[in-house]
Amino acid sequence: NLRGVIFDLDGVIADTAVVHHAAWKKLAGEIGIPFDDSVGERLKGVDRRASLDILLEQAARTYSETEKEALASRKNDYYRQQIEGFGPQHLLPGARTAIESVRRAGLKTALASASRNAPLLLEKLGIADLFDYVVDANHIRHAKPDPEIFLAAARGLGLAPSECLGVEDAAAGIASIHSAGMKAVGIGQPQALAGADLLLPDVAAFDISRLTT
Ligand code: B16
Ligand code: MG
Image (cartoon, rainbow, N blue to C red):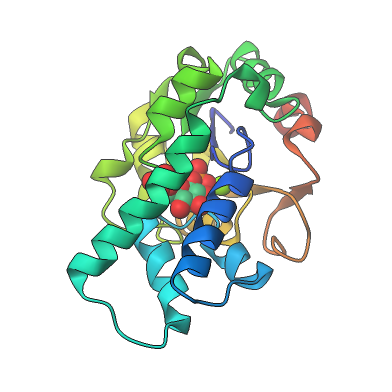
């Protein structure tokens, strides 16, 4: 019995997947690391440090811990520069309606974003009050595809994982949802999200009434 829906943020609700992508690409260019779309796809949903490690797989040399911290924070600066100018117009089409319809159907809503910038983004988008619970990414020890973040969201809602549904745009996120014991709705392209229980082209196609009956 479905009682809660747990949303990912970047690429599902907010048009930020492209912003993360551009920031990593800029950093990669600066340090001479090849960056193509398949690397970009692997970074989706993965936290900042794990993303950097994936990027550095292609590096010609090794980087010290201090250098890695500096690189990760440089990427975050690029990302923040873009996010500064964000507002409700950067919600993906249909995102607000999708979340509101879940609440109207009497279900709970949570946010399971790996992003440490999620609280800032929720304020800028004007949707902070639409979630019953927001996972604090600073308290998550294991990045997606580990189930930790979706399990924390279910716990925060006071629900069993089996009573929750996860919505994700990244392969790592779908894997995280499934390991948590939940059904997964994939938002995006079939190539990247083959494992999803239901695949939708975008969040505008999310219809809670078709999932609860
Ligand atoms: P930050 P999500 C994820 O957010 C992004 O998809 C991923 O590209 C990013 O690296 C990660 O957040 C960490 O973000 O650097 O802002 O802490 O998709 O889980 O909402
Ligand atoms: Mg995402």
